Amino acid sequence: MTLQFLPSQLKRRVVTSPSAARIECHKVTPGGAELLLLLVCAAAPRIIGAIWLPNAFGDAYAYTEQIYYMQRAILAGTFSWSNLFGFWLPLYQVTCAGISALFGHPFYTPKLVSAVAGAGVCLLVFILTLELTQNRRLSLICFAIVALNPYHILYSSSAMTDVPHAFTILMCVYCCIQQRWFLASVFGLFAGLMRIESWTLIALIPILQLLRDRKFGIFPILTLLAGPLLWLYVSWIAGGSPWRYFEIRNDYIVQTMSANPSLGVFTPGRLGADLVRLVYTCNLAIMAACCGCLLLNRNRRNLIKTLDFSPSPAAIILLLFFAHLVFLFLAYFTGNQPEIWPRYGLIFFVLGLPILASYFSRLPATRFRFSFPAVVMSFGLQFCIQLVDVTRITLKNDPNQLAAEFLGDQRLADSALKIYCEDGAIRVLSGIPLEEFIDQYNSPADTEAFLKSLKDQGVRFLVYKNLPDSRLDKLMKKIRAGRSGITLEEVVPRPRKKSKETIVVYRVHGNEVAAKHPRSSNQR
Figure 1 (spheres, rainbow, N blue to C red):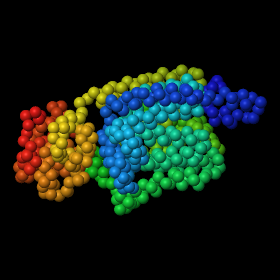
Figure 2: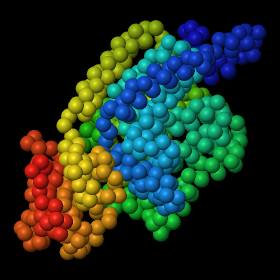
Figure 3: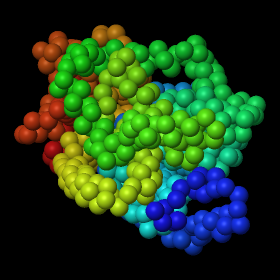
Figure 4: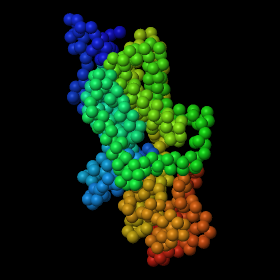
């Protein structure tokens, strides 16, 4: 084994001797110009993707809507604690809202923030791999694997928290390795204000500090506790109860389970599909290397021995890797996480890659030659499949876009147009100011009152999408039967190819505004 493959923790534990200083001086450190070049290389495809690629998942449009309304509240001077409350924890949204309040573009700002965070993730993978292996070539390979990963580029270009959250976790890991505990707790606070699974850091960071320093500080603990306490306070202010957030999530899970009863049964097919989704983004070689560090007897004894005294950088990364994995599996098997989506594997992909590199850097030459082709095949297969998948997502016809473009054209022709639409993706993609839509949140719940509100507000277009909790599902039969006093005409029909989502744009006839604005010849 050559000196450059020795992990940095092993070098620090070398017995004091005249050669100790010589060993320490071989520690490889990245230069500022090198880091800047890598950051630019990783950022370029992600920033281009943020402008050109579509959002990878429908939740991105819900994030964008919340950011839009936060931005309006900031600009109007009416922003309060209640504006932070929503279905997701608020740090990513309020950060993007603050940036867009200064520079505008609430649609592109969250995508660009995610792109910059994605570039930071690539850089941190390089730094952590270098810390574990002291091998620049191996670290650059790991950097390239993340920087060119199609799925990571796609989600780095989307207005979602998966990649920004991974950035805060990697920063937390790096600060723990450097024994900067207060900074680690600050990034732990940021992570805990983006995704609830990072509340596990409240226990993990003090434990790591205790193991390494034989003490823990009160300020890091208070900093980590500030996140959950702040969120409970926001829930109380906005919803009347500190537990309102958990009640809303529970209602969502109940609705999802009732709409898809198969999600309540753990069949072999369902378990296999969810596991494949996780491995699809995490990579089988990474998962095998991380699990092997715990399951193999020799590695387990070494890990326990290390944890008893001072956790190595690899042990710190493994601890956070399995903390998030255990949290995900607990939520999944207790019914609090109905499905495992491929994007959940992104955090394990970037945490586990330095572990895989560290594992291979210590392999004997014979085992390395045997294992290396399998690892190359694993990453090559992952890249090819993901490239095809991302290309399909990018090039496929989006029915949301078709409906949104039609509504945008109609709005340009008539600035007083009133539209009822329950779907956030269509609202955002249309380019129409979101507050000018009529939706389920500003309409009465009662059926008769709802139909009356359509007439009173002069709704001219109604967008139907077969959402699980859509009130239109209950009303369409009555409207189509003519018992509601209004009639509907399809203007953007269902696509010929069958889709999981049925989207139809109807022109509404029979209210005051419809009578004042007869159908023009150029309307589709």
